[in-house]
Image (cartoon, rainbow over the protein chains, first blue to last red):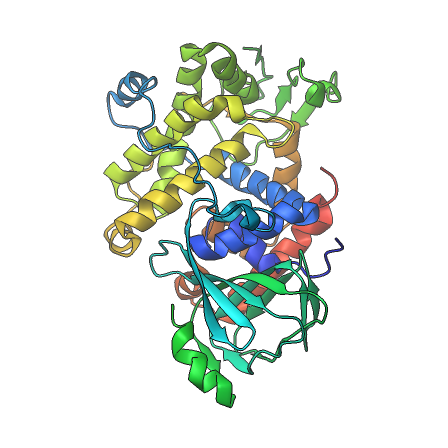
Length: 215
Length: 228
């Protein structure tokens, strides 16, 4: 796949620095899994973090800290259970690894041809995360973002004023962007979305489905 | 473990001459390329330096507790500072620093020196524990309770300089950033400040924070991207 749209530099910096909420992080991770260019850059940014860490002044550890830690070296981890298996086999083909730790809700009807599936990320003031599946040729309602919406295309493609977004592409929509995406013909489009702030639906259908979008 | 003697210059922070450790295919290309890395931070004369990658590998291969001790003594106090600056209380920072080093012990076999430098690897462990630990504990209250960083000790009694070719390259790239750009990168990577918090702290508009980060990233990309 040819990836044309990547997370912005500020998004990648926030990811490498650990600033993103877990939901947005999972969406960026799913992009990194399919994009070596961004993966390589994030690794370099982690090197930057390593140097900044190595150059910090020391804060003395409490007396007995080392001994205490040594005493815990061979205590096995309590909660490092096996990664959860995805429920249905047919999911595994396109579900990103980054979602493995999280529970997925059932697909729910949202609008004609549009389904949504909640990703249960304990976010703590972060984003709402969901999978969105839309039939080929669907036009999604006009909507305005008030926060940041980060979307990784897992299958199929959609197009809006920002360009065409195919599998592997990342749509980094920040601030008051008004979008009316339409799904390309031929293939169902599946996206992983993390949303902070609100989304305002401005069309007649949007006003109806808006309450359903509140996850 | 291979230690490398450093050349001391006037008792000030000495440039390190580091002989990268051999033995893995990934590092063979560095063979014989002695490196001179001028440390940007002033330090007391160092008795020795160490090869942090080698120490992590010693843990992976033979559960080497001596190697762990050296790593702990160097990194735990820095991870503690990292946590304090991220808004942890002193006792949380102590706990998270211990946890980070425990994780280094447990995950040593996953360390791949071809992919990440030792400091970068430890940074990612500390960063992830910070996300899990601090956010869960409710960082807002802690951030306010912990503005005081007086617990930090600028004396570094038993400091062991760690350096690799990779870190040297990164360090010179960071040095190319403007003071303002360096500050926003520092705030975001080390002090766990989101962009609006950085704007408040530096008393500049949010847009300026974003453009500084963008410019810093652009600069770093020009120097570093595609070289690894």
